[in-house]
Length: 596
Image (cartoon, rainbow, N blue to C red; front, side, top):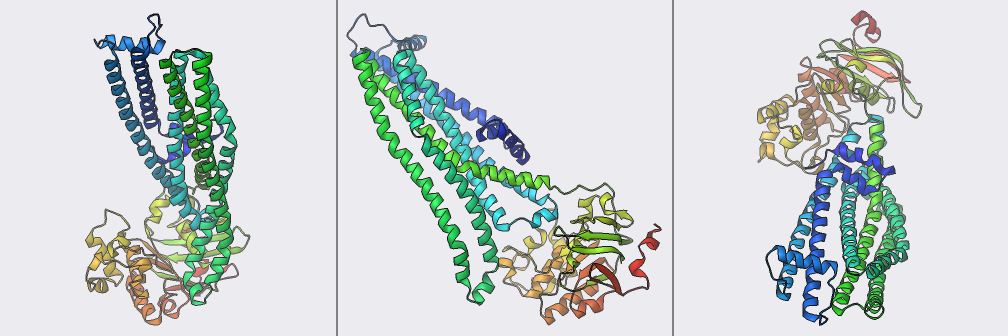
């Protein structure tokens, strides 16, 4: 069963106490326990299989009638007796093969559990990051790079899940090593100790390569984040760059980062291959020394020597695989902690939940002595008081950069004033139930955001509560139904990447339809006609005129057509809001309209 995304992040709080594998085990205790139990039982079965083989070899090669069976041989004989079988060589061989086959089946079960968990980890980390970022303050979101977030979701989450896979492999190899060392000690404590020492020396000799891999992995994570952020920014500007023949600037900007990433990957490859190249000859040397010590110095029977050599090779081999797996873990570990740091940073900037009061926007939105400045210190509003009446078209004008979009963000609740208040039907924004308030808002940005899916998908955005009738009503209200019905596939027509198969006016009318599909009380138009030609502007303005009186419309605009249709116009300049058109005294009517 999958952990909740929050569990993955909560489990990461053990970072200071246990390694990363501990965080995964805490987040997925059931699957982790099942995998480790299967690995442990598989190792025991493999050990028993080795005991059977040792008994079989002893029965076929031992000529000494005074031969004293070792503990593994005694265990094998007792198992045969328990099953009512005669402990002959063929019987022992059959039992050994059966136990080893069972071990393979349990190993498959363990690997399946690990595979399922890897898939859950990648999904849960991605969801945790997306939810944390989307739940953060708008100011935090604006500081994030789209390329960096894309890299985290696509690459870092996958690398982090692979870290769990290699961690599980490392734990399995280490557990098997301990089981084989135990069997070796049962046959000959001297040989068992020698096997343990040999494995420890092998790990110690090659640990430098592990440290090199860790550094390469950390450098790789930093470079990928920076590189993909830069690539994302450049691809957004691809059209003007190509139009001005400036593609070479992209190459110059990214080439240095590409070279650094290549060097980091090269160091990672060198460390990995050096580890593999050195492990094999060291393993052969240790096996040879073990054979000499067991047969010549310890005077062990040939059958026991053969089994001991096999055990020694297994122990050192498993320890080698443990080290290789650990190398892969440290290469990927930085991706996991980078993800967790990103999630923690977003949680630290979590957006306030607001209050619990509900409104319907039947009266007005009031800015009452509002003061707001951006994080860079630039003052946008200074003691601004004005009214946005319900069921009217209010337009905000002013020079570029004056802060018109910031005023919309204050209405939506994405930003909070540092002084004064924004009230909806007399309720301060801080006391509103924020999400229900936003569910009453339809928002149309300057550039329509459409994905390469059907018109129906772009309108509903996955909301299964919306039926075809709801979509058609919204299209009709946005004067878009005729052109949609004229398309061969109607609502199922794909719009192309970014709506490339549609005209600018069609894209914007679909954006208006999407904003209207939930039947909002407030329609916000953020320079929604500024990128359209005159004909497309006229069509969209006609749509807005027909919507007047049915809902409250708040727009930021530069074009004359929308301004001409406005019931009330405010001008924002130099942090001051002035009334251009509307009832006399409307700009200062905040206190009169609500008796405050």
